[in-house]
Image 1 (cartoon, rainbow, N blue to C red):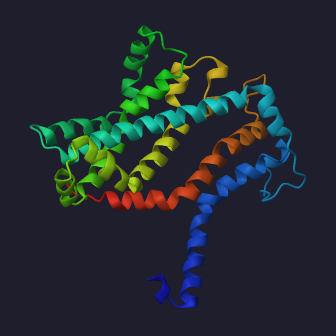
Image 2 (tube, rainbow, N blue to C red; image 1 turned 30 degrees about the vertical axis):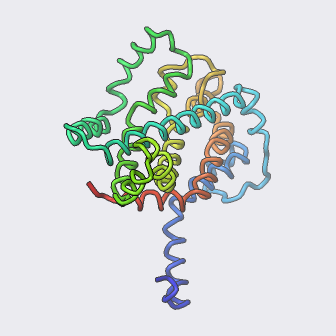
Length: 280
């Protein structure tokens, strides 16, 4: 369709999109550039789009004030484990709800979806008590298990179910003719075809785990075990006031890798959501 547009129309369209992107791009631009400014320039008016004398001292102080490198590793490996676990659970559950017929299937699926309606704040106290009795407080296990078995996994299951519902039934019939069982059909045929949906699930699951804030402040108390969102709140001066340049430097290092991943994988993300459809 875009090929049929005239050059002038394309120019106007790109101009409108550029203007609309400013409210989304400017905060990130301000965060990164302000991390290179002294505190006196951060809130100057009118705001400076570029630092007059870029300074990288705030980035060094991020690592001097906290074990930020270890905290970065914590967030990374937790997000990866949560992503892999959610992909496994949601793919199996989504396929079962979509392709295996059993009594009470729709009722059970509605019960699972009801998990999306329960705010995490409602369940955080019972979860704390459970993990306390298991001796898992101040460990990363709650941050791994809660997302895999909670709302993010429910949403992922819904996306995978919708995708599997759109697969032609002839594929399974051909697999049965070839002698494949139920799991072999899932593993060799359905799962490889679901790459767009898996890509979408992987991206939003990773982002959710990377940005998780409530659970870390409840379950973790040791600075070396903190994740990045929790660590960002600890950059304060002796009077409890924010260290703006250090906080912005830490926030820039936290956000930029995620932005890069999303920019690279956004096509896969949009394609995966488009293929899930609204069937069933």
